[in-house]
Length: 232
Image (cartoon, rainbow, N blue to C red; front, side):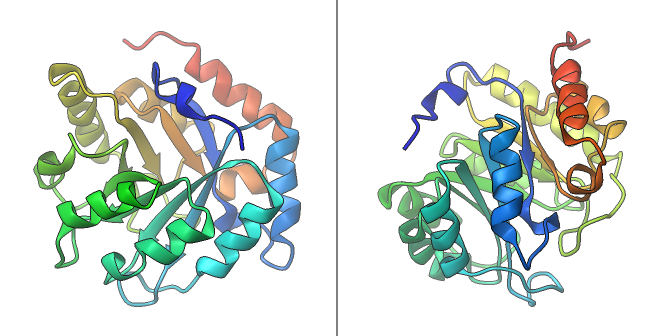
């Protein structure tokens, strides 16, 4: 398994294709496409039909993906009871597990449990959730995911007001000498990526825009050009 610790030391921007937008009848094809583009990271959305109005994958899907790829598996739990599922997903091979602050459960304990299980812990907030809701956990995580759409379905439009929270996440990381990655997910395309990156995001999830783009290599090159721009 590849050592991905270099992605945190220092944090460097990257594109994270979301397998949710791939052909579900042939997920492996999507995985091999991501590998062929020399990308490191694969975002995997887990939805329960309760916390969000959609159903997607379970631990077995993650285990099957793990058996076929060495990509970093970034597993995003959109569940009413994430604390009940971190162990099966960690055992399935998730490299990172992100959990939402919105449900009623012991968030800090669950983050600690994720780390004990050998995965990297991460926290998530929805577009209407204030930045301050994540602050108590930011010294316990290795990634902070800010949803730029209401989670549940792909293909939604980027919500520009979230940019202010991305800036706060970036400033908080600087002020407190932390090194969590700042991930954004939802409505990211060749136009909105610049806004997210300039606000401070360094881990850019792209689903529908990536998988539907005719020339995937061109899409990746455009993102990487954005990452080469100085932040203003």
